[in-house]
Image 1 (tube, rainbow, N blue to C red):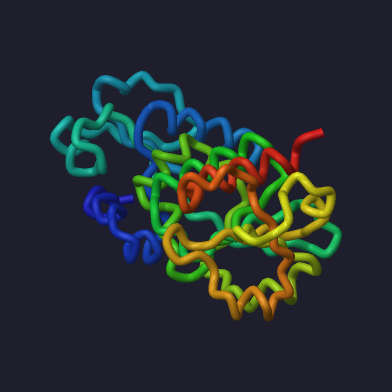
Image 2 (image 1 turned 180 degrees about the horizontal axis):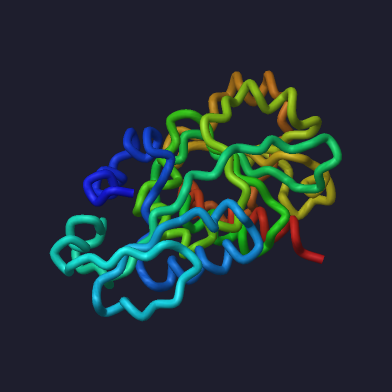
Length: 242
């Protein structure tokens, strides 16, 4: 990939146009290499390095660039001197016999929240992440960094509308302050778990149309709500407990 095109990958429209995104820093490149060992899709990456990393052993084509060029390619202010350009993954819908459970995020906006959620889903495994239209781009450099490489290990779909869930999942659960406790046995018996926007939640009418079961994380109520990533973390932990 040409250097001028790599620079453009900071913007979503060019990531979509070129079908690639940036993976910056030693840790993330190592995680990408780890993912490539088991997933052929990630073997199509390219590596860009400065002289500090010219001896880096990699399965991908490697391009040596100057420190000045790396500063132009990288998204961070003080780049380490190594980054990969990776192909965007294609969406794969669940088959009817799949044992994966889905976590659906409605209009999630914060890159840090999405990155943290992906780390949780990768830790526990067996989950797919679905993002609604209007959500932050998961291949935004800030999300990629916040995910700490989890992005390469979690099946991910974007632009999934709320009304598409009913045809894909028989039982849908939603986190709601007035619902049943997530510690109840019924919480585990769903196919898709729906979480709302950090500020607005999920439209009430949509929940009714989906016939979603409502569940809550019991607390003392000293504050109005939980951080989105914290809520997902606790719910996913509960689904894997015992």
